[in-house]
Image 1 (cartoon, helix red, strand yellow):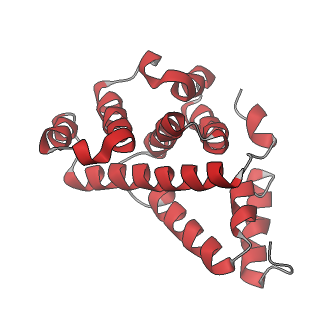
Image 2 (cartoon, one colour):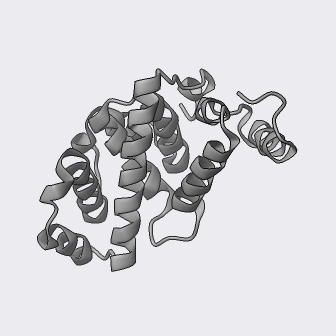
Image 3 (cartoon, helix red, strand yellow):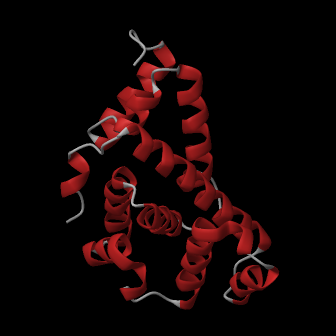
Length: 177
């Protein structure tokens, strides 16, 4: 990690401490290069927090399902905690981590997660029929763009986290249980 952190980065980390009670290890890991940290956080914040036809919970559900396929320990723990917190349902968070198909999901969530899983396992096999299945449960083309981008982002970050041995903060394990 760059030491000392630039003032703007330190302010961001201080906000994390205030809101989360920790600085997520993924941010600390990226802080070896402030430009890379800024790029990572800008993309994450845009995909996960900006206005979208997808709810925050839906985006976190995608993160967990993609991370489950990829067996990314960091993201399963961190985003599993987010699903538990946002849904108010600890069981849902655990089901999505282990096998999302056992969860009681509605048609919209099922279509979204089926698409995210297929894009993770074999993105080149996605066809217009897959996109149409999303439209049939109410997703717009913009929503499909968002589903694809959240899926792609977590495929990238899962691979980086796993390849570099990134571990989640201990605090995530006990959240929203």
